[in-house]
Every structure is written in structure tokens, then in C-alpha cells.
Image (cartoon, rainbow, N blue to C red; front, side, top):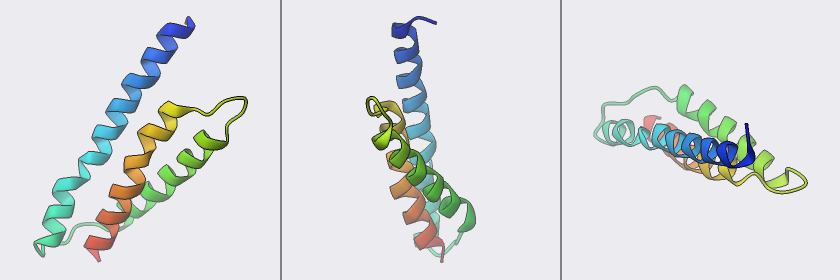
Length: 86
């Protein structure tokens, strides 16, 4: 694949990954209303996303911004979903 197509694919994957993590919002809402959901999956997702964000920042020769941007919401929403499920 050429470089332009790879860049487009990376950003499309970024948007879909972000949508996946924003989908935690209903679970967080249910958790806050007392209908507690699973805590384990959001915790694992937050850890996984944290590792990918670190990877994207330290990747050489240049940072991998699609990976950083795609996984950043997963860190925050995963932790928040985890904390509200307890």
C-alpha cells in the first residue's frame, strides 16, 4: 500500500477505536445509577490502552499519533468505567 492510503487507514482505524471507547458512556451511566456492570474488562482495556499510548509516544523515528489518539480515550473511559463499577 502506498503511504497516503496507509495514513488514511490509520486515521479511520483511530476514529473507530475512539468510538469503541466512547461506548463506555452508557455503562458508566448505568454504574452511576446503581446498576453496576463488569469492572474487569474496562480495567484491562485501560491498561492495554495505556501501553499503546506509551508505545505511540516513544516510537522512533517519529511518534505514532494515530495510535496515541485512538487509545487515549480508552485510558480515561476504561478507568472511569472501572471506578464507577466498584
